[in-house]
Length: 64
Image (cartoon, rainbow, N blue to C red; front, top):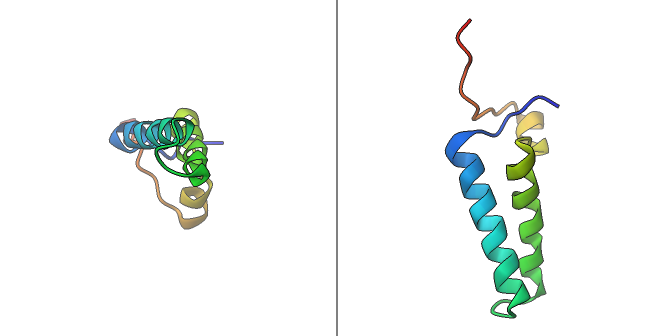
């Protein structure tokens, strides 16, 4: 799996995913908040399946 999530996109995914999971754990929002595991996982792995299917890539290009 080639990384296709980078930089700010990754930070936002981790923050939003963790925030949703904390809100669900504290019962601030309903159980649907555990869906935050998806952006958290994609942010930590640096790879997003829909990005791969659609051809998106937010990683910076390497200069060769």
